[in-house]
Image (tube, rainbow, N blue to C red):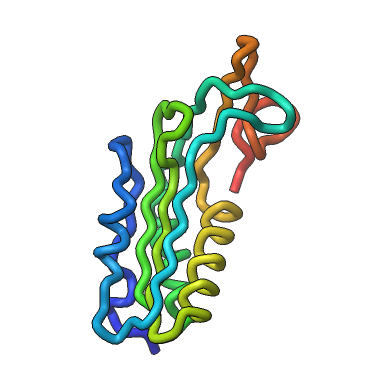
Length: 151
């Protein structure tokens, strides 16, 4: 069973994300390794030049994010975890998501961070709309009618 303090930070915010805050949140004197993943807005996707993007979150997104962190903590005993996802309009280079995992050993920290970001991307109902330099836009990971996919 994981300690209550295994999940150190969980947030969805419109404010800029400072990766060091997540890094500090998972700090633990027992940790010999800490993995930090920082997802940023890139300038090109699927062969198109990207001008920026917007993330929209379902009202239950924070609850689901917390559940994901708790599940990863259960699967990765001894790890401390943090995750923050940004919503709203973002520009190229902005930080969109940060996950951090600390563990007594580096391999467990890397595995927990990888599991955490993969589960966030697949399960947390946050939708991305990309805006392209040519003036077009598209929803990423959404159904054929252009609406955010149901989770």
